[in-house]
Image (cartoon, rainbow, N blue to C red; front, side, top):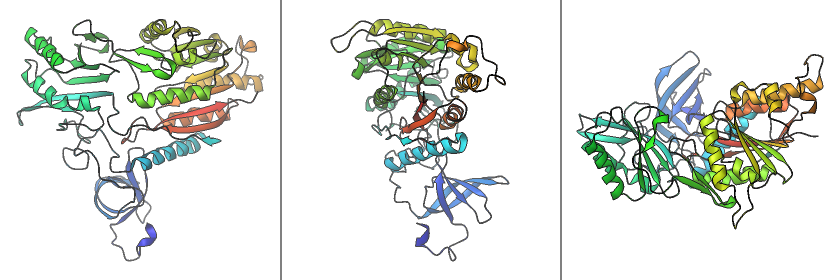
Length: 476
């Protein structure tokens, strides 16, 4: 700690690390107040650093020595993690104890809510945590034929580099997938298309490992045979091909088990395509859905809207509890897929009754207006799960309608607003604390809500990525 050494006699190049930023860099200040961002440094450490970039108000560098070590510093479990040349860039926080990672993410959430939104949650939710290793069921692996090495590399990019890391294994991928990295290198090295297959996208279901091969030129019959032979040798592997954009993805061979994941608590089965958005961490997703529904408290006589519904990850569980659910998404393709998932699960099972009335519609939620919001009808509660951009237009439309009730002279009422009412509760699931904070500020300052609870979701252990959940209520 800072009081353990005499700061008047310490070398002038030592820096006291105060905190971590959103990129998992240590934050320190020089004597003149200039901020220094230090890769590899942790809070409450004295370090020396090599500066790599300078600006008038800040510097960025890499730690070269740790003179007083944080009690939360640990030995990284992965040999490919670090600051050395060729280190994998997939993780940024393996040198920090797992509990401290979660605590820092919680602080990031609280700081963003207060500094960006001027919002303080009444209650801090217990963090949602799960396995720290083998959790990453989705990944985009780069493929590179490195002629100088006479080898093919398959993996994540090196830290701050366009090169592919030489990683024979990966501790955050499921063990059965990590074990495929070296066989995939061998496979690609035997393909005639060795130079035109830049990427393999990975998506694991409950019983299938889907590998999407991006190929820039048509594959020969011999290469297709090699892919089939690989799938036969490795249990559960299923090849998909992507000749152009995501819309061109298709199975190499029809048949075989379906790519899907389960939500056992709700007895739901969710088929998906490997390029569909699904949560990276299925263990955390199950807990996330369960907590979201407990916080939502959808009643059997209530109508709920699930904004940014995707494939129905929250919509279908809500339909086990609510009278009616509307799922809204921006893509017609996703809406069609969500409808299919609803139909697959609509009938009752021994573990649950039939799903409630559920409808899906396509709407551009980034261009939401008060009039469009009114058209979707009155709902008792909302579930909001936007991408990183957040739900600004949706929340702004809600705030505008509230302002119309408070001051109709300066905010003329939108047609049809008289019979419309705002939801009494909103559960907001976020993958970006800054856009959550922005939207929370609107909900609290202009839409008449209070933030009654907020907490982090450690969806991506060992990374600086912060997922979170917040609950907003309106006093009726």
